Each structure stands twice: as structure tokens, then as C-alpha cells.
Image (cartoon, rainbow, N blue to C red; front, top):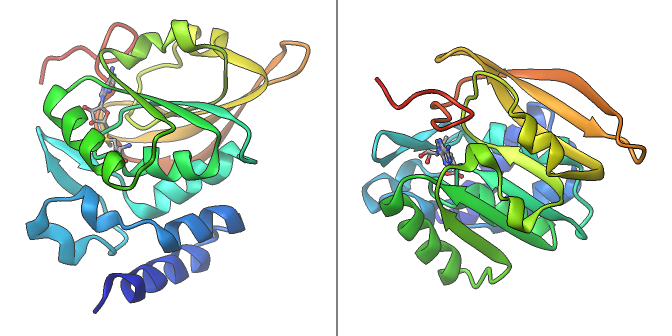
Length: 215
Ligand code: SAM
């Protein structure tokens, strides 16, 4: 099956499962997910599942990528922070739907691979940093949207501080295995509201404001 046909099937499944944001649907129809996974796994790239990307990390399931992106309600004008670049696929989705993306990955070999994949798609609006994303990216703040793509034990306060008025933050919060997506909205007056969304399972967010590095 060619990749465009496989993407069409994948996206049809996402829509069946409740994804309604047409901009998200369109970008996932167009973006080649197979270039973000090992060649040996490219046949599975358009199944609705997570896949290993090396270093004991994963590229997230397409449904959760779509759902988290939808929750950010991007219009195209935003500056977005992503924590947990991984393969770079989610950053590519965000870069297509927003004005600028800053993304942070703590594992160097993954960051370098992701950079290559993003460059091959000429996504020049992605700024990638290697480091501990649990501290956000204060030099680049404020952000109109923040997306955390690893499971956190709690919501780091510094991320709320780095969110612009009117901004949204989506983060999986829970234990080492199971989490719930937490959607945080900052009002124009600086007030903050929190709401829980889907159940999810992410690899751990490791760092100063996350889990410790111990197994
Ligand atoms: N968004 C990714 C994608 O599209 O492939 C999937 C992310 S993967 C589920 C989680 C990633 O978060 C891993 O690559 C992991 O190394 C990274 N990570 C964990 N803790 C981090 C931290 N404190 N700062 C930056 N990245 C972190």
C-alpha cells in the first residue's frame, strides 16, 4: 500500500474515534509519519499505535497526537513549546499548524535524528534544543501553547508562568504508567483553569520538575 493510501486509512480511523478539528485532519493526511520511524518499522507507521524509536522511547500513537493537538486549538499564529521531541513527528504537526515551534528533547541521539527528519521536510520554523524541558524554555517565553509529550508526576509551575495570557497547555499527569491529559487555560487576566481530558500512557518526563532518572 502506498503511504498516501495508508495515511487516508489512518486518518479515517482518527475521525471515527472522534477527532473533529479539520486542520489537524488535513495535516495528518499530508505529513509522512514513516520518515520519523526506523525503516524496518515503516510498514507499521500508519497503524494507530506507538512505536519504539530507540533509547527506550516511543513515537506517540497517532490518535493521541491528533487529540492533544486538537486540544491546543491552534489557528496558525501561535508560538508553541513542545517538551519531548522524540522522533519529531508531533513537532512537525505543530509546525504545520502554528507560526513557530520550540521543542526540547533530553536525549541527544533522538534530538539529532528528529532534526534531520524535520529538515528533510523543510520545516524551518522549528527551534530544537537538547536539555531538560521540565524547566520550559524561559528565554523563548511566553508561549501561546505548550504541549508536554511525556508523562509528568505533577504540573510544573514554571510552565504556567511561561504560558501567554489566552494560552493553553496540555500535559499528561499521573503515575509512572497511567496518566490523564490535563488541559490548562490561562485567561487574558492571568487566571488559570484546569480540566481533565482523556486517559493516556506515556513514557516518563524525566528532569528537575519531573520523575527521577532511576528505572
Ligand atoms: N513527541 C514525540 C514524537 O512525536 O515522537 C514523542 C515523545 S516520547 C513519547 C517522549 C519523549 O520525551 C522522549 O523522547 C523522551 O526522551 C522525552 N523526554 C522525557 N523527559 C524529558 C525532559 N525533561 N525534557 C525533554 N524531553 C524529555
